[in-house]
Image 1: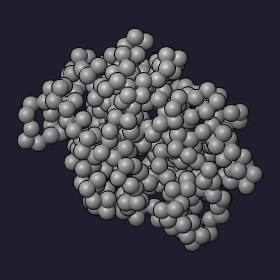
Image 2 (image 1 turned 135 degrees about the vertical axis):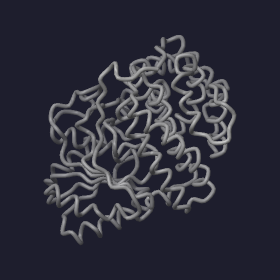
Image 3 (image 1 turned 180 degrees about the horizontal axis):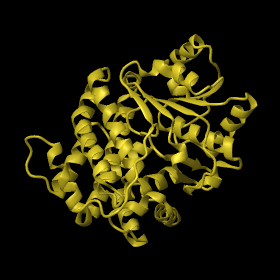
Image 4 (image 1 turned 30 degrees about the vertical axis):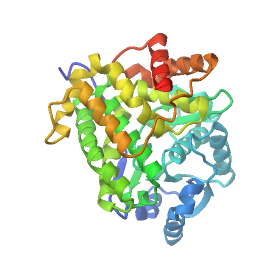
Length: 383
């Protein structure tokens, strides 16, 4: 394995990490000269009480705000357009997000439309955004999506039933206030799904053909954190030390995949989420062992770096690693909900086509063709 033959860039936002970080929102908004902020969130986060706390912080800082909460899992393109209308109607000049990956991706989309015009679906692909988005400050409430530190935004086009990937350093947030305490209200199911999402980020970024020593370092440390902390967080949802470790694992995974990109797991998960509106983290957890097996020949050398992530274990090979990943997924309660639900011939063909068109597939270590992707889907659905 050699490094240094190719140039690699690394993009990261400013972030503040630790319990209580969320309360710095007002100060950062003032630093950016934001007189009125669009606060983007969703109903679940509002019910958990985090938005109320942040609003109190804004009021104490004398910052005006408008709340936009019409965001669902797998945020829709029309929700982004509605949010952009609210931003402009209320003459906001900055965006604050309190939520997981869906509100953060929606907020990025709102920022794109506000400063670039058109429809959010016009910006699919890599580096298609001409003008920077307004100041964007994130308070993530999950430990998994890492949208708060990445240059990715994933938006669901419900008309075509596809997810589009928007990749640009213009959507990297200005500041992420990563407060692990905001994750203690997550259910077991969301804790598991978002945690496995973070693990998938780390492993796919590790074997990516755009990886580097910098991203590898983040991946390997992330994997250590997640394998140790995720079972503890599932066992006791109020375990703040486990939540801190999971937030760190998610942060490191995000910094890695934002720069090394991902692979077939995410390309397939985006296709599944687009066509069937399925939970993203759960899809990743189900697909990861299958894709690891598919990639094993070309990814074996990179995967061998994971030996140091597990103490007092036998020497790692790919089959051992696949079993380890599957065991973790089983332990945290994720089942293959896709088994026995083989789609129609038309649906399967659409899944394959959308997977091959996804930007994430470009950096997979093994170049995939339609027949191989179809076989992967059939294996997952028939298991």
